[in-house]
Each structure stands twice: as C-alpha cells, then as structure tokens.
Image (tube, rainbow, N blue to C red; front, side, top):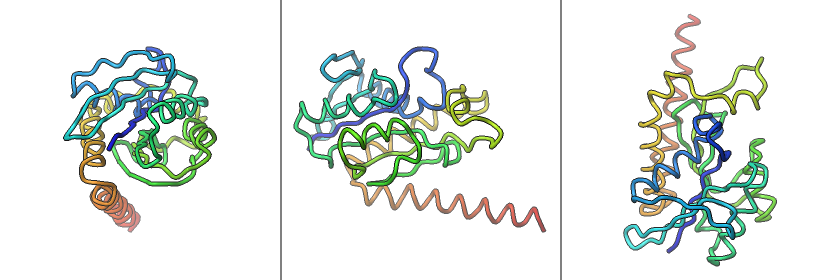
Length: 206
C-alpha cells in the first residue's frame, strides 16, 4: 500500500519555528530519518520526496501554498498517484491539545484550522486520517492568529526533539500497525493525562 503523508504549515524561514508549523516540522523530521531531502515539485505545489519502508511506498508532501490553499497541493498529489483516501495522513497542529500531546482521528471537523478547511473543500470530505499534535491552549486574551504564528517558548523548544520523535513514531506505526492500534495507544494515553490533570486541579481547589 502507498501512503501520502502531508505536513501542514507555512512556507518560509520566518515561520519555521512557529506553533502553526509543527505538522510540517514532523513530516520533515520523518523524511530526514529516511535520508530524504524534499524538493519542490511544481505539479504538487509543494516540497516532495518518496521512499519505501517495510514494503510500503511513502510519499512526503509539504504544501508550498498559503495555508488556506493547502488542499490544492494535497488533491494534486492524490490525483497524480491515484491514491484512495485511506492512503492519506495529514499531520496538523492543534491548539485544543496540550503541548506535546498527540491524537489520531479518521474524521472530524476542521476545528477552525484553515489548512484542514482547504483539504476538506478540495477533497469534498472530512473522512481521512489525521495526526493532531498539541501546541497548547492559547490565552483567551490573545488572538488565535497571533498565538499560532508565535515561536515556541524556550522551554517548548527544549522538548521539541522528543515531540518530533513521538510524532514520527506515530506516523510509522500508523502505516505498519494500523489506525486502531495507534488510536488505542495514543488516544488512551491522552485521555489518561487529561483525567490526571483534572484530579490535580480538584486536589488544588480542596
């Protein structure tokens, strides 16, 4: 089976270390593990590379469009390789999750994310796999656009290598072990963390 792994983010060095680029950073990191140097491919409107892993063909794509046009790049690659929706894995930042948290989903709304909105619009569906990577909940007094386009804090930057490693492992597991196995592992872990946080907060209030 072939897979198309898409990392959402903004092109340009000024956005390289911003929260909105965590999906892009993760896919780039996985490509690096395979010794790939992603190069611009005009027909895909993005940086592209491919390799094989345990008999699986993996296509890597980092859209070079504006975030709200990411779907154009995804659709172009899907059409060119004649891939079914089951081959698509989109890696995306998520401000509804705590920093360093991961979740996988086979469907769902965009949650306000312009990249996901564009993909849903171009593919005419929201039924595809996504790896959601937490960037932390923003302050209610801060504009969302300002928050996601800010750079990671120094503390977060120190943890990024581990976060990227976890993201890469999740992607490899999705392709080799399947969605259900990864969902049981990652989503259960996330749920346990949330319950522990709630218990801690209740304890503090008492």
